[in-house]
Image 1 (cartoon, helix red, strand yellow):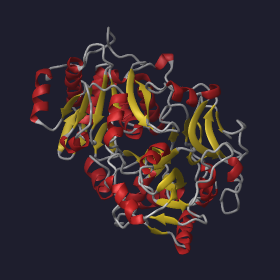
Image 2: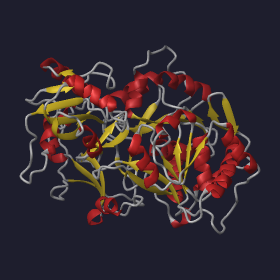
Image 3: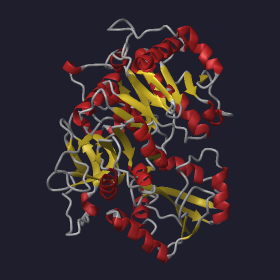
Image 4: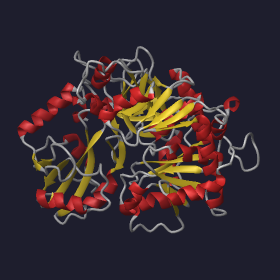
Amino acid sequence: MGARSTAADRRTVAELVQERWGDHRPGLWFEERTLTHHEVAAGAAARAALLTDLLPSRAHPHVGVLLDNTPEFPLWLGAAALADAAVAGINPTRRGPELARDILHTECRVLVTERTHLPLLDGLELPGVRVLVTDTQAYEDLLAPYADARPEPGPGPGRATPRSRFLLYFTSGSTGAPKAAICSQGRLAAAGRSLVGHFGVRADDVHYICMPMFHGNAVIADWAPALAAGAGVALRRRFSASGFLPDVRAFGATYFTYVGRAVQYILQTPPRADDRDNPLRTGFGTEAGAVDAAAFEERFGVRLVEGYGSSEGGAAIKWSPGTPKGATGRAAPGDDLAVIDPETGAECPAALFGPDGLLLNGHEAIGELVNRGPNPFEGYWRNPAADAARGRGGWYWTGDLFYRDADGYLYFAGRTDDRLRVDSENLAAAVIENILARYEGADAVAVYAVPDPVAGDQVMAAVAGTFDPLAFEAFLRAQPDLGTKMAPRFVRVLDRMPVTATNKIHRAGLRREGFRCADPVWWRPTGEPGSGGYRLLSGADVEALVARYRARGREELLLR
């Protein structure tokens, strides 16, 4: 997903949208609705003309999109491309002031949403933001005068260029608040064409988009290659494990993208004798894990291709035939990737494996993935400090943990200190800590990641002070800015927070001990807050959890 654009290969997303004008093949499916490629291009042109008229003069041409995966999302992506504007994907799992901050930080003067998300905006201060609600008559009336708009062909004044800012998509990091990574039209078009070549995407293919389009996964790895190849897209409003295979068959889908948790949910659906009777050729994504990937191929006859591309475009790993089980792949062409100890700046030694395949030297082999070569990182919106941190020393620091074997294959091992990835959502520990610090019994709070038994992370909190599980559960339910993925799965209760010699919270020690510590640990075995509450973690619970990690080949991650 970190494709590079060369001088001989400069295209824009706008040009790819324009090329579909006059193409009357079916091109977009959603529930009972079908649009042709031409209708999609025409809809994008109408919205581009509307957007141009709505944006105030001298305002940054940014439009926020707070939508489920409905046809309006790709239509507004196409509109922004044609209008030389940028789309900020707004995450509907955010709440209250944090949601308002995302919209205002990216300077969106227009926000496109739908009625189901209007309650999220209640009470928010959004000065100067024009809200468009797509599933209303007022919206249809607003669009009507632009019905005859056409996508403008070729270059011209005010038209998009490969360097035009196109996406502002949020990614969390060590500074706490989510950062809006910039992606240009040229980079996205190049990424789409790269995936077309890698997977042999054809014009008669159908890409199934069930991952949320406010994330780079769906836009960069699913929508962009379909657009570049002239293939169709089928949308699912929100991911559904039970709806996955019926959708694939109904739409004739040949390709989809995923995150590891989605694959696990699909595998938990009841198996059927005809599961392999489907048109899929390939699934492309991250963090499925070797066990689930093999089970998915065995059950559905579809190979899952694991990939890695930093959201910011600064590093990419490419899978190829012969990649060992559990590995993501080798560095993509043009990348000089290394696993670096962030404390010393030295390259970590190669991983050593036991006869059972378990990592033996994780304490020294696991480090941060760094790209030491040229890369297409285009920066963050209005965040020079984050730009500098990401590119310190002239290298691109991904913020992701990996280890490398003696043959150069790279294995994903999690996130760096202040980053958590829960159910494919990137979270910042500092944001959660600020919320949990309001808990009346807390003298000090630390939030950190513990590995999930399948993929990504789970949220763990250490609380120094007094802890009442029922009161804490009620407290979590009452916090308006606690996102749906932020509630701690594990809560460690201490008399005093451990600190380093410089009086900073000793996060490395907390992470290393995880839930296997001497202090009492409360946990939620399943579900969200309110679905059963916290109970004390017993020795038997710990043994059962470790067995789950071992079965997934992730036990070594508990030792880092």
